[in-house]
Length: 320
Image (tube, rainbow, N blue to C red):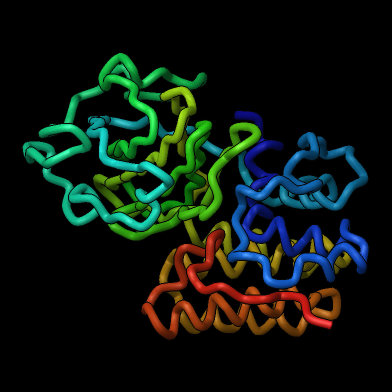
């Protein structure tokens, strides 16, 4: 993947609020009162922009700023990929059901599935680096309104910050080492949307679990990891962007991304400070402040800031 594409998603933490900030007229914003928890699946002006550092848009400026301070991301291959399913998803009930693979990863286990017993199927064709979407029908028989799980492993020698990206017509949730990191509420109705989140990889084997909520879409999937290197280097790079006194949009996006980098590492005090800085930014809107409050509440009640892209507490970010 080209660096411009990946760097654009470093701002993906809060695409919807940023649209409220720089793209949406005030009367349109007022019509959005009572929206569900935001998701990075929601189509917006920003996430349809082409990644181009010469682009004068907000996203283009953000990419250009990051390209000056971050290295080229390194693709990381997947190993030991397995699939299991199908489980029931009629009417998207799978969004509310926690099937056994979410409780444990036991590749020898047998579970009750949608129409009988199901077992993990080894999928060597999904190992390595996936450049194009893969059809899953090679290992599982497609059936409408199903949940399937994909398990994969990623090996690294030292702690790293990586970006997980999944692309499929289905709604995808993702766990990294047992922690939920991507959990969009809304299905992808009109087009495939790539879900992304930053992950902290620990030395050794990192366990990745994907949950695909399939309706009548094709059974296909693309997913990949790209490493940006050591956490402290990423933190320093983002601090450098802030210290350069960038324009309002770039500064606000840097605050979002820095909060995410701290949060995925479990740095509670640093995350609180980053969220406070975001709240106090002169360019922050009611959307931005409400999101930061929701993240804080999520941490207070669950002990985790994650998932950040899909905060688990509903809120009304715009009033009056």
